[in-house]
Amino acid sequence: MSGRDVALVCLGCVGIGWRPAPAQRFSIGPHAVLVDYREVSSGLRYSGAGFGGLATARYRKLSAAVAVERLTLDPTSTSTAGAGFKATQVDAWVAYDVASYASVEVGLMRRTADPGFDAQSMGAVRIGARSAYDLGPGATVSFRADYLAAPKFSGGGRAAFSLDMGLGLDVRLAGRLHGVVDYAFERVNRKTDPGGTGEVSAPIQQTLARVGLGIGF
Amino acid sequence: MRRRPAVVVSLLIAVAPALGRAQAVQNATVRRAQQAYDNLEYRQALSLGLAALRERLAGAERARVYELVGFSYAALDSILKSVDAFKQVVLIDPERQLDPNRVSPKAYSAFDVALRQVLLVRQLRIDSTGFVAGQGAVPIRFMVTQPARVVTRAIGQTNLLVDSSAWNGQVNLSWSPRLPSGDPVPAGVYTIVVEARLGQNTFSASQQIRVLHGTVDTLPHLTGLPGYQYLPETEIPPQSWRPLGLAFLYTGGAAIGTLGLESGNLGASSKRELAVAGTAALVTGLVMTLRKPAPRPAEGNILYNRLLKEQIARRNADIAKENVTRRQQVQLTVVPLKSGAAR
Image 1 (cartoon, chains in turn blue, purple):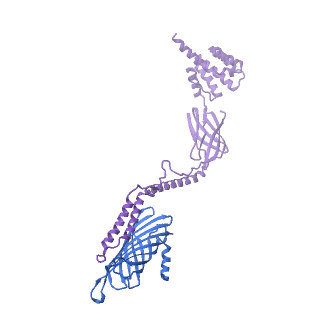
Image 2: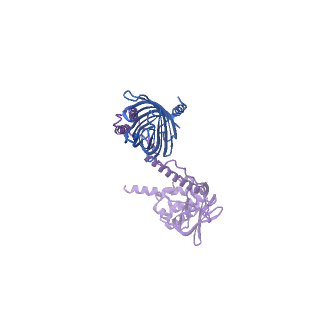
Image 3: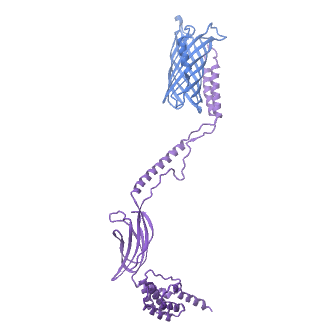
């Protein structure tokens, strides 16, 4: 494990808390990750798991969240890929509440593949909205949809249509301890023009689930 | 036989004035006169009464003899002489009253005429009372038997004029016990003197009173308004399927979004991740549906309680202001003492 991995593990193990209660200003906690990744064609499929951490902060109507995960992906049984790869994914959001149940948000996403040539590394800007409702005392469900603007890929290309959507659940388990479950689906319509022979579709699709705990402060 | 009851009643009426008096008589002549009257021997009672008047008698006994003489004259139909005798009675004892139900009409009318022929101030009464200085008055009642100029004064540490008017009959006055400066009269003993003047005739009666100073009671602050209770500021909403419905809605949105956005080139995506999050959301929604709902703020009750608090605070502010005024006021208590002599 490299020094960077250790740092990520330390960050991920600190805590998690996707949507802290209104009285809480800050939360942090670790989570486990399940991930499914596909690229270019149905034959290039990877499945894996990982771990990470998430920190959130809230000040009045402003809220922010940062999630960092270390993922290990292996080719599935039906995949034509020869070897798996590791990836580091960073997601960040800054949201502003426009209503008690709705907020607009902007953010960043960056996924770096290791080794770099085994999968596409990409980065993009998020622009979207989130809706959240209280299911009951200490339980909140949320749904978000973000447009991934200005995506950049390590292998080049462009993506006019890229979306990221998710389902989130935050349940207060006891006192400051929260349980967090999050689902994210990412679809990137990447197109490349290798050798100037015309654009070729090379889409990227990822589903990711986070399950973790968080401590609110 | 029919006349007998009427005769008995008239005899009882004639005898009635003497009842209850004989036992207090000291003078022998007076006692004999009383016995003669009791035996309906009016002439003998009259001669004995007149003889007794020539003897040395105390004031009360003399008044009793004049009364006996007056009744005897009335029984003998000498009304003018009866009136003269009753005049002497009321001059000696101005407070003397006859009960019209117990004396003969002739004697009562003679007594009434006698009262109206003599200038008297009778039945001076001052009741106990208490009030805040400047906000109440002392009731003074008396009777003047003839039309006269009546001057009423309160004499104590200072000499205060209560009233000066022409009166006749029953008089009711209200005296606000204040000095000319407006301050309440000092505490102490005062004598209320009522002086009636008609030509050369004057008559006065007096009554002593004690004026006491005290502090005015302050009002207690309110902690609530009668009939208005604070309402609970939280209420437990009725149990509903809303949490599960919301969980279905959000999970369904995520599922539909996933299915709709899947790329055809990449094949169907893994549903493992969606199943994890979706199941957690649905289970949480079901648990929250089955759980007892948490109390939520009752906006109407909160507003009502706020209005009630404001109302109580406003009333308490008024009470505090009123108490400041009350602390500067003086509570006067007036208590009548023994009656003074009539002159």
